[in-house]
Image (tube, rainbow, N blue to C red; front, side):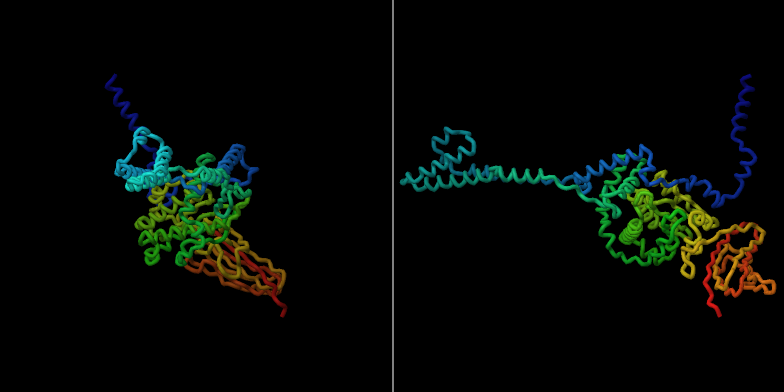
Length: 532
């Protein structure tokens, strides 16, 4: 029985480790960037909370009031202006100096001639005041000693020495002590501290600032207060106020980091283009030594500070930024200097700029990103990581359009925002063209006008044509753009205009012969045509 049971147990163990057929097939599938990204933690799950006090839960409101009390106490006691640094040990040095002076005086006394009178021997160890009086009596009696002039000189010397000693060792006059104590007792007015241009506790905007620190520390009041004190201290040490006026002469970095437009919820959008550092000259100028790296860091902080000060800190307003990080052609792991600068910047931003990011969108994510993510992840809180969104090269445009409307999204990232006839306020219509289908868009025209439009199809590889179909039966259809295939290598945005002399419809036709759905973006405007 025992011999038969052992094989059964072994067989059971083996069976539990055999994957099902479907799992075996998945295991044999090639590993792609898509599978890598699917292994990342669920991203984009963060939902931004309200900054209105009326929307706060009771526990959060209570935490805010407690933090305000701590801040007020700190302002009253000037705790923000006095850094918690170990005091320099000046007292021991003064004590050593005093001891040396005392020893010197004792030696001088010991070297004086032993000309004490009998009265002095009887007095013994009298207090210093008594000793001075006795010497003064000797000075009065000295003129009676006519026979010995030496004794008179000697008595005068004793008087001078005794008086000088008593004067040196006498305490400060009581009046001076009273003045000092009076100055110390005068209460100082509370210090004024501003952060990101907002004075603490001055108005309701300050509450929004305090909420950022509370949320960054899960509404743990003491932790939030400690973070705020550290942030204010860091800002003084880093010289933020002076940095705002400093000219760092970094014009070449304007293509690396820039603000452009807003997302669908009204957040300003900041673009970080790491691929610009593929330029060796720019990379060397920015990261070749520690001084240059610190200059870049100061420029990046300066840029962020200027962006933050444009935000609205009133309750209910937008006080956060969407960050888009383009990793296309990024130097990647091979560039140690870039890794170090990125790591240092991330640490500073997380420690001193709480809750200023509504979302972090990473696009054109390359294969090596997982390694970078593992490197950076330990330095980020779970709350920060919940704001991350990742997209590979083929999904970058669709991902951005999910959060940013086409009229606000730069052309290079799949939108229509660029300099020209149309602006960011001109709305864009988005349509999905199904695989192997034709889609038509009609623009009705009811009067004479100049009709202008621009459009793009993400990824193109479709046919595009335009014609004008008059309403009158006796008129002919006008071909504005003969149907032709538009490849992905052509200009991403096509612009056309047509002067309409009669009522009718301008018809756009998009023919998608591929097996993939395509996203069509277009917008139009009319200008009244002067009568001939």
